[in-house]
Image 1 (tube, rainbow, N blue to C red):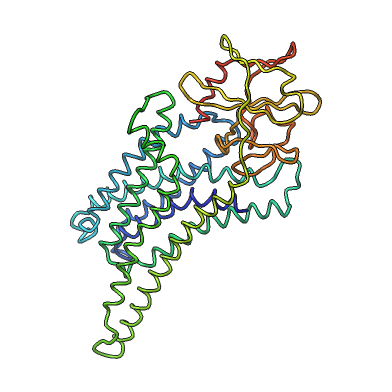
Image 2 (cartoon, rainbow, N blue to C red; image 1 turned 45 degrees about the vertical axis):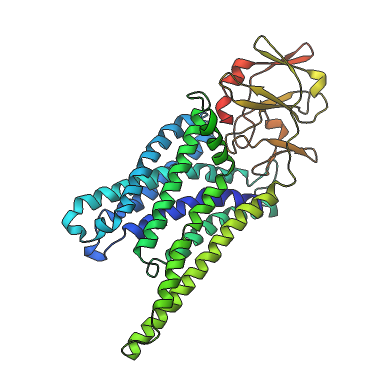
Length: 422
């Protein structure tokens, strides 16, 4: 349950905060006074979600095996839209004030914001959606207590992200536009950094070779991805402080009883919205630090074993892997990517050979526990009989030959699959 919670929340929280903050910053008018283009942001969310579902389904069924081929152009477009959206947010006050006088500019701003939302949703949500395939372990009944707990953790992770965004949104009428505009600009800027990091991570696999400070910065960003997500939540501390200040400055008494009640109501709402927002931020940090640490503290992948590598052929003796346990090996591809592959002897004498990665959970890897092979990321047990076949959370299949007391794998086949570790 906790695994699913801490996996679903990081994927959905940045999107929820992005959609919420852009909605507040660019929102204006009611009824006929509301520009028609305001609905475009909603359509951006819907289209991005539908595209994410289709992409996740294509990956789960192995229709698409190289996700980087899709993600790379999407990320390039996303970074461009992110930068444009930051500029729009900074100028949002000018765009929304007397917008009828420059309706075309506001429509263009909403169009860019809609594209920013659609591309961010499309990139972020497929990995979250693919967790649905890990609710039921192979051979289990579809309805078990474990399955229900996994589903509950998944739903709570998504629900928590939505709730955090909704709580922060309650400050829109008390924090003041400058504070909320600042928070929104930072949220979008951090989203751009996340997208740029993903681009460099893909490109580092073969398109470019980073060195020195740039490479160290990339490694730091990859290793501290959760810090960026926490920062996207904590930036709303600025509106929270502004909301508290506005509440404290509001006089308790007005010119009449009605106005006095309004002033007191504003003060209560301003302080309560800020306090609840700060509690939500603390909850995010707790989930992404303590919660994540709790899911990882007992799982350690076994070290890679030795094998023969000569003339483009990796050779493992049958005796080395004949005990029926999981054996892990490491290989450095031609493009510099460090890969892992696994071999296990299955029932009946056949061998399961595949990458130490899957289409759903990436290169998290597998470990052996109580005779079961378990995915480290989603905690689902893999049916031994299906190792070597595509689909679900199975290891990505790897071509091999067995005979003469040895198992051989062509390094060209490993090189062709290096993108699974990028």
